[in-house]
Image (cartoon, rainbow, N blue to C red; front, side, top):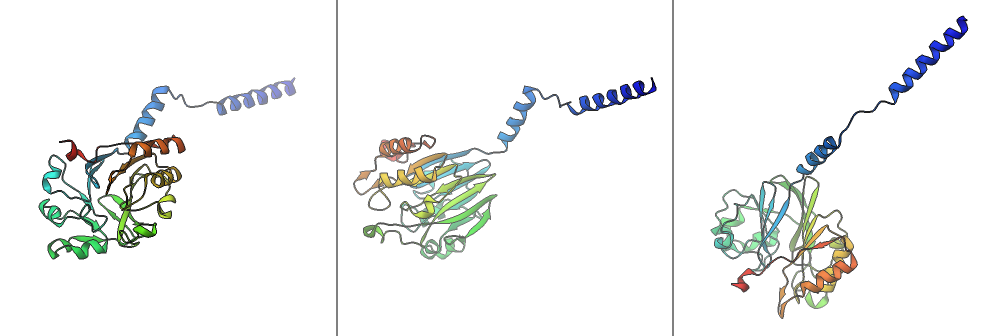
Amino acid sequence: MKRILLFAMVAGSFLSCKNENREVPDVTGEDVLEGETAAATDTAEIDINPISHATAVINWGDTTIYLDPVGGAEAFTGMEEADLVLVTDIHGDHMSAETLAALNLGDTPIIAPQAVKDELPDSLATKITVMNNGENLSQSGIAIEAIPMYNLREEAKQFHPKGRGNGYVLEKDGQRLYIAGDTEDIPEMRNLENIVIALVPMNLPYTMPVDAAADAVIEFAPEKVYPYHFRGQDGKADVDKFKQLVNEGNSEVEVVLANWYPEEES
């Protein structure tokens, strides 16, 4: 009888422990949604606001970036003041000493390649932080990498020699934004990974044809791409064709056809 009672006590203890191990937290659907919402709010939205051709204002959370500011201070009327300025190259559609001076940037950081600094008057050159291809720095809460931008086609190499200008990859809170600058479908572009938004040029003879731009975008597969800088010697590149080619090659890439030439509609 004692053996039977002992066996019953041991068995009961075992079953009790087993039931305790099977208990799981009571997580409701609302708890899951709240967790997902909290995670989503940690990622700031990136807004691309075209000004003209290669010039844009980028609002990234509480940070405002002026890209290649040209067109005078009036072109930025109604925009938030810049926390950071990026200049890609020396040509007049990217660099304007008059605009930089008129914006009264004060102590706002200006990132540019050495060639840009060399072209600016001393009053502006002293404010430039030089980045060369392949260099990295952190500014205004954003990690910045200077990416090469250059021509591949023999007949176009004089426009953008390798090492003079910068494209940029910006990273914040795990999101990566690629600004290609004046370039063709170079290996440094094709090898990019985890890009959320890309700005990619396509105009002849200065950068690359539409099909080359589309092929590169299909390969590095950003979540979203903005064709920009698409007015060339013979008018504008066919961005509708670009969108079609990208959609056919990788339907997961969203192509955004923004208005980069508002002055032509006024």
